[in-house]
Length: 160
Image 1 (cartoon, helix red, strand yellow):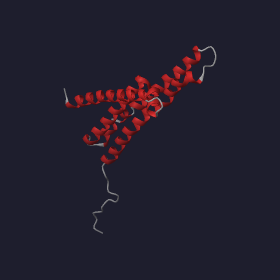
Image 2 (cartoon, rainbow, N blue to C red):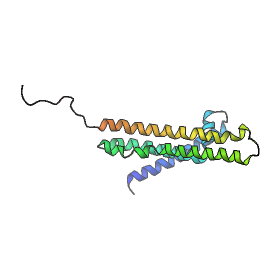
Image 3 (tube, rainbow, N blue to C red):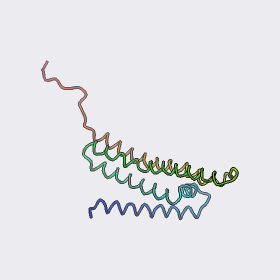
Image 4 (cartoon, one colour):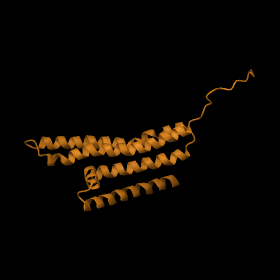
């Protein structure tokens, strides 16, 4: 098996372990921001966003050094936007949950019933876009650095 795939598999396993450690820490302290963030994401989107964000960051850093041209780095831009796409899917899933709660209740539900679904709607795109922004910024900076430089004024050979 190639070395790159083993490193990526190890990185994803480390991402899962780190998120579960964050869940354990958040369950001990209910009043903290981290606890609210982890509970708002839930297990599904927390794991998906954390692992895809770390993988996008890893790929963008690794290929920033290995790529020789800016066009090779431009091919990785869709991969760097993957956490943002997962965040938008979480937004849609949260809205479906809100509408499901509204449809199943006979009267307008209490705000505490809608809290978790609205928190998912707000947090998933925010976390996904934060991970995507970091990976995209790394790729953009590396692309600018790899662009060929052109002289500002061409040298004339007419001697005069």
